[in-house]
Length: 570
Image (cartoon, rainbow, N blue to C red):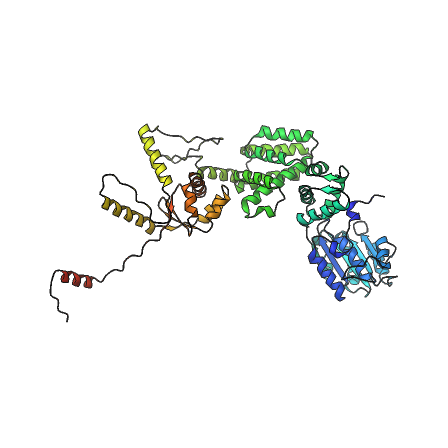
């Protein structure tokens, strides 16, 4: 008879258990040193190896020839326990044997010594399902069992266990297995099964399994029923997942407020027999990825994506604020929770997408916060111009569109327009190296006075410069436009003086970047998004120390000597 993969490839020694070194190492050391406890509690999410470790431990304590804390697998006891012929190891499912009578049977059996092994081992799975009476009946035996009895309790919901049970057990927490370990195990099993699986496919299975090795092997079992060469498309078809392209398109429709496109995609996916609840969960996970990109420095360690998909996700994240992303996730989470409770799943998802495409339909506090955050970003980037009149207290806002237009009161004459362009171009190109900047030319002024005036004005700018507190936030914002530019400015400081933003750097690289108009525009845009202001960029130079003030009396004596006045010191 065919044996499913998760049973066929169940580990037989602690070294084969994947992703749980904090458990296997401790158990092996206890077995080697002989410090064996009478009661253990294994807790963790599904498919992480609780029952597997319990069975390995039961064989190890009864093995006739243990090897480095592991069962040999060849002796009579190991083979008998594996085949179920030795009754000294009892495995009970507490979900179906949860009453006080079942526990009394265990207590009565525990009075007899083991038949062939050294210990009688009771593995009680899903122990949280026992009744209160059953827990109370087990307490005394669990606290002081016979010296040849070991209890191993396993549960996925440790919070449901009474504190009296917890205090009598040595607890081991099983963690969710990382996608990297699951992927490696899947590739090993595939090679042993004369099959092949791509790395992207194994990572996708790991993401779907959510840290459960058993679930991952079950999904691969389904894929092997289709083909022996497993690819990403094979996994998506076997698991009933939507393509990543659809997720990006749906997310783009929500971002661009395109209700018709969003609903047409839902209709297409529904006709392709895609599960709407799973699609909603995947879309929620997609926006979680955008949230991590927006709020963490190294989001790739939290998500499972190819390089191209991650770059596309970064692009989508740049169009949203963190408040908008959280609002979208809240709407999708609400829709997911309501699915299966009356209305069809398709209707719930369509309602959610309509709300996301038309936020004015939602009147909750979260929706208002999201809309305010979007308006703040548009004001900071100059997409909305606020015009304040002298006698008016209201602010007129431009209508949101793909290319918002900024109203202009009166057209400028061609001569004025050209003069303004020349001035802006001259200012943009005047980014000197970290030395004394060139002084601007002033018409109809003597050269000497011009230099003195320029030096004086520059000295005033440097003297009035104050540290720019928002500079780290600006550098972080530059990463959205270019990580290379952000890296160049990572170790710099900035000072603000009026409408000047002065940059202090130890190398010339930041100033070389600022000489290029494209790079300079990215820096200015990043500054404007954070502060809402446009600054003139330049290098920072520490102002020269003021000369020490002379004593007025000494200054008088010096003047008298210069005028040939005889002074008698008394």
